Length: 220
Image (cartoon, rainbow, N blue to C red; front, side, top):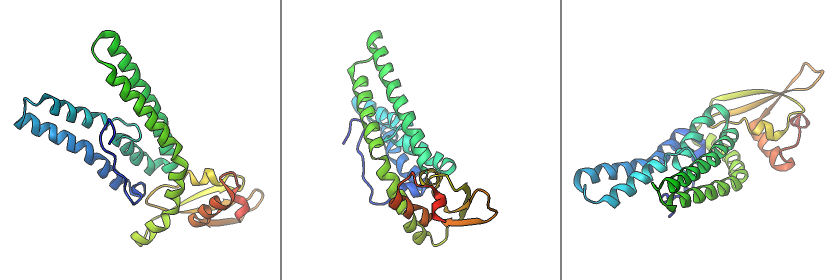
């Protein structure tokens, strides 16, 4: 239980399915807003109940990780940018949002329209963003390793090809991998007209064995 609501840990990796991650992420704020609507209808005098649910519902829609709004934002961007770039972008946005909440809280204190609660929320959110950032590498590796399970579950996945030069690193290639697709990497060596095809599985295995700075051309 956190100041911005409860956090559930799910056994699977929702990041492989952006629609599922969006649906699960929106369930929490939707529940708060539903309770707020029911409160207005049946318990209009329970002001604390109304304020708490409205605040939690709206705050969790802020596009900052680990809030639900941040997960929705990442899921939408991951289809176009890839999981790595989308998460990195949303983490940077999350730090900016935490700073904006802190400025809002300080301005509210100066004008006498808010209390220390807003600053506390900003500090807690920034700390949660830093924790999420610290777990990012682990989460990304887990995401890559679970791709084989996604293929077994779906049975068939569409293929997305990428063309790259041999000097490009495994980390740069892996950052392009997007959910919902199986990737083929076409490597063209300098001075050669031949193409070498690597599967996503080969790239992931090499990433674990050699690290993200290893040139993809050394795999062919």
